[in-house]
Image (tube, rainbow, N blue to C red):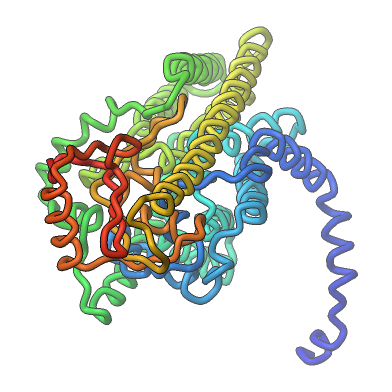
Length: 511
């Protein structure tokens, strides 16, 4: 029987049946994908690169960094065996795959929460996918594994709600792999489960049913927690195998496990603000307005619902608790003492989409229209943010590469220059922000791990990094020469001597 199924399996027929069954959703998805291509288009048309991309552009190994710093064993494996060497950074293709993944996660999440009308599905999906947070993430061309495994995680969350044991087993595998790449999927899972519970409570006809729904949501969160613990255990196995120690973020997260410390941090979960580069006041006003509209719809719907007073009271209590939990879920890493950069804060998109879905189910008339307008304004504002962000990032990349080429020309035009290859050393680091760009650690000249890579991959300079003895000889030459050294592009900021070149980005030590 099994062999018969194998030999008679027709993939063309299966695809045709799938398209026929889901043609409405497929068309809706490609509308969302097309809109996101327009919103994020600068990323795939123009070159933009943060410092990490300069470091890994031709597959530089960062396996140890991922495992010891961020518990990202899954990303490390994918970088080592799938997206490796030249495949690790392909800005055009990776940009399209990233935008495709964001769009897919958006529509899957919204449809899972029960939204059906195409216009509303598109708005809710764009609230997830077209956000400043995803723009900050998409700026990294080497984040290809993150976008793909986040999609795995969302699929896993949906499979988790199916009755099949096989579906739940696949859900566990997908979520573990996703957590091993980007732990933010835990917050996304919690947000989806929270809104799924909130929507289910509206239809609950008794207090017992509400309790059962709450218990079911807790079991699903326990499932995600077990997946999180399993992922961390896998990362520990890699640490032990290689005899590595946790550093930076991972060390900070595992060093302070005192319960009182967690309780002290709870307050910060409700006071943290996302560090937008621009439009922060406008974003927060629109966010709060959408929250208030949704809460109004929920409370009015419960107040006028034809149910027993006790059921309505319990529904109100539970939904109020769920609203109160939302900031805690969005800012969850802070309870471990970790900071949340904008690129890791995209759970806010799922929160906004969940609020919009609930609002469409509870609001009527003018207030429903107002919720749609507010959501559209959020998407429009996000689109402007994304456009300005990539515009500044593209100009920053162009200027950094031009600056590296200019330094090479300064070396070659120096009176002491003879031939290449030469010894090369860069003293210190410095930011060279173009107008509109404020991200210090996403510039190659401000980081120790990328400032040599830009010369290696984007200029024709043939060099090796000079050793301490050669550097001491250069320092002696500068002192004997007696002229003051200024930071690049100032006077004497590029010095060549004995077939060695030194560039001074910071002159604090030498002067």
